[in-house]
Length: 300
Image (cartoon, rainbow, N blue to C red; front, side):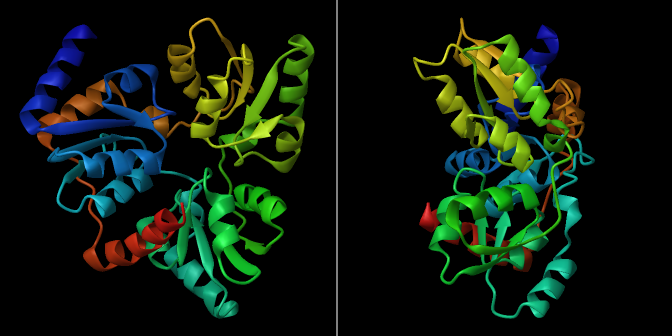
């Protein structure tokens, strides 16, 4: 593996590339990346660098977001088949139809969505800033896509009347409330943090529902020595690196995203070597999608 890592780092230098890895990537992919984080955080990091090439170790919508925010850079996705089932649960055509059904109701779209869906939206949001974005939207009625569970969580925090699209993350719905409760019985002093993409009964069983960045911050607290983590299991690789001596327990070993695992060091090497697959977004869609992202950033 060391030889392959050296080859990747040499190619990175030759291509003037930056390597981004999502928190859910394999540990060895996280370890070779320049930045590890959530999707929007990574896209913004990349836009701020002077790199010519972005090698995005994540899923398709994340690479699209990077392409939208960095139109002058070449964005590579090491496995073009690394998609997001939740993002695929709504199309731009379906969102247009919903907007026609509810004329004048603003659309807030989770960043876990395609560029085409973002382009039909008024605002984007992340799991970290969703409550703040929704609170800032004028009026009480909102169409929220595509994640019904994140939408439900935001609704409980804001009291807004939200029309929720019936999408969900297949990885997070594998986490059950009994998973949290059983671990708490085994570890009486443990706290549990879960992602707001989890089902409401899982959020009720936890101590805190927060984004991956929120989980990372929570784990650094001095009063936290062991933690149940209710999200994709490979975030624990980063948690352990950043918090030596602390104990982390995955809420469920079933919470694995197969699409995130499609990216390997070998595929990253071949992507940098061949400069493909390149992810692009048509300029008209990119401009409209960026407007929705920019509104979110202005609020945040």
